[in-house]
Picture (tube, helix red, strand yellow):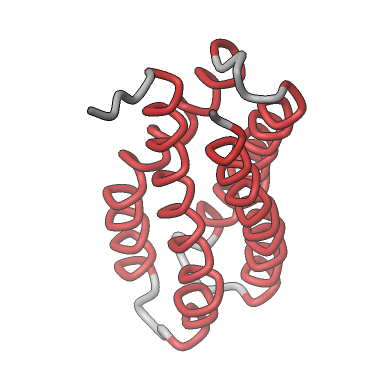
Length: 147
């Protein structure tokens, strides 16, 4: 009989949630956000619906990713400290970019499409793509480091 420890379970949930978020952010960046300029008028119903749908899609996996990253950073002592530190630092980076760059630009796009604001959103999102992709590597390394 195979037994799985709590740290192994949390690390696997973390890897799955991070993997989902990486796939989602790449899809948003490569497919969804580039389509914004093609929406036309009225723009607000599209942006409202985008924000409603994307929020429903990401709330559970992103919540799981963040909470497991914090839990592993604090309680995952069998995982190397630098992996735990890098994981939680990258989570902080993604959250900061979302809060201070991506979300405000979405807010500015509510009433109408603005090409300059959209370019800023794409730049902010590119940074999130990089950080989340790095996070996937860290999450995988965490699971691989377990005995």
